[in-house]
Length: 109
Image (cartoon, rainbow, N blue to C red; front, side):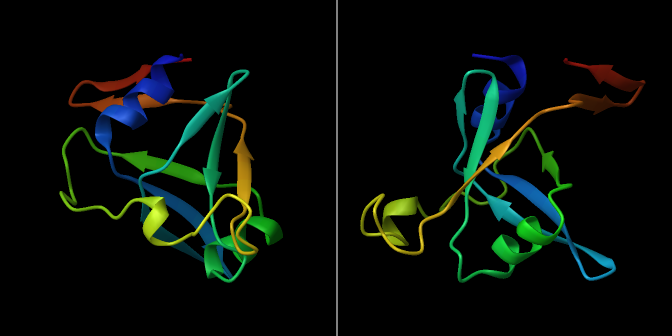
């Protein structure tokens, strides 16, 4: 597993930022998977985040090293099974990953 995947898993909750028209839109996420060096996230095709990613696949993930939501719901509360008609998965190719510190940026990739 890679450092950026481990970092996201350690955070528990991270924020996915998309473009909503001309403005950024951020929302909390907690589910992430890694396979063959790529990250995978999920979003229902009924959600605005799904439409925003389909329209513009340039996204940003913001993660903080603290629990922002102690009671983050798990996916099983939203989807009955992986075959649920609204359960969709997006592949995320990491092109740049870093942690911002008080001293500047520490690149992880």
